[in-house]
Amino acid sequence: MELTAFPHRSGDSWVVDVPEVPGLTTRAQRINGIVDAVAEEYERLTGGLPDRFLVAPENSWMK
Image 1 (cartoon, rainbow, N blue to C red):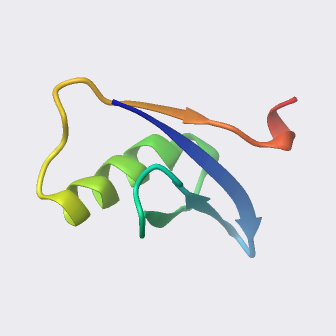
Image 2: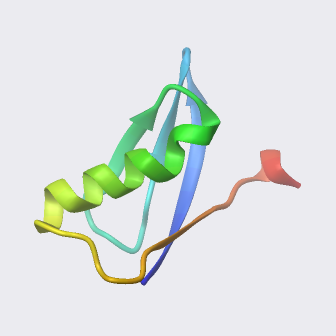
Image 3: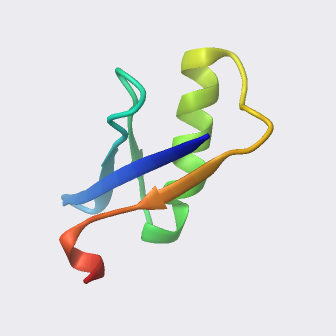
């Protein structure tokens, strides 16, 4: 499963929206914590993680 993370700054943290999973919005203190934050929230919402799990950050700050 591949998820697209759309991070944006909000104060001193990153807010991350994942449109492929309704309701999956999370926060990360650091940009390198986005994948872990998405995985934790995905697991909380669905009860588990798929065998293959890829989070692809996408935003204009990366270009």
